[in-house]
Image (cartoon, rainbow, N blue to C red; front, side):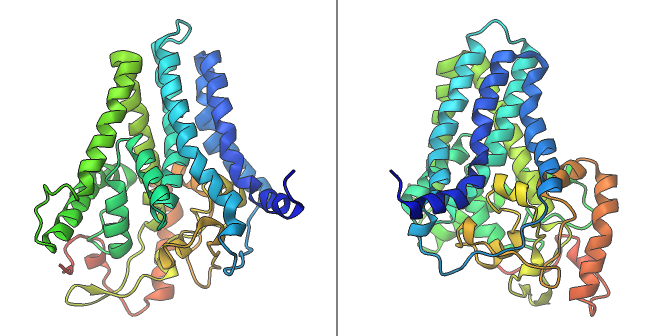
Length: 377
């Protein structure tokens, strides 16, 4: 039997295990076929938006002195998810390519749902894992990113985004008045280039060429190539393209969240390409309870950038006095982002209010909306 103390710890962590319910759901809709395959994206976007409205906000903060042992049940979900996702992804590739009841449209819809899971849950868990010092956790994070063909995200996120967030040198910071449909192709190209350049520069400081085997891009390419090969061996060309399709959807899910997290927020330019330190008010915060369960507190993004190595159960919530607040959780906000006029109507007044609150002395914001401000090298 589990000791009563452990039962209490499991009970407090249990809401964050809700993501596991998406696994039986995706298998059920795969068996049903037809329009049922759309239930998975509907659950992650509409159901959790509805749950946010019902459950409200969680404004409480965990004790920062909580030990690693007390976080066991929280950490466990991120540790087991890579194995669950791997089996589900390749199991469904086999199922979809060896059954007659799924039409082509149903297969496309089914793997749209798979991509929603591997993006909404898999990449978010990978993000948590890659920030940890434990090598096993970092390896599992790499494994998850290889399943969506976006392995360079680790280098981009750790070496570029966290260092340059809120500046023109960060491709992932969405600029004021930049619609998502312009942001998406820009960030796809920009993040790949900036991540490779960051690793190349690190090697150059050690007098090593980018071709040195210590460059993590070799690992990224090997893992991604292995995933593609496995998809082909299991499902032929159909399996190969279904794998790529779900990876694209997962990447879209990631980047639309990236778009929301920092839209229009910038760090003050000091001089000679130098910027102020990252503070909680440089990220949008959301305290919506249900979507934070699904996204393991990713919406407490202000604290994540303030303390990047803090595990998700310990991330602190900030009030409007310390960080800008989103009106809704990520599921609702990402739907808004897909309609730029609606997004701008909701968010642009909030950005202008943020500017007046934190930087009343700045009257010309044009240099902050274009990638032409002098940047450090």
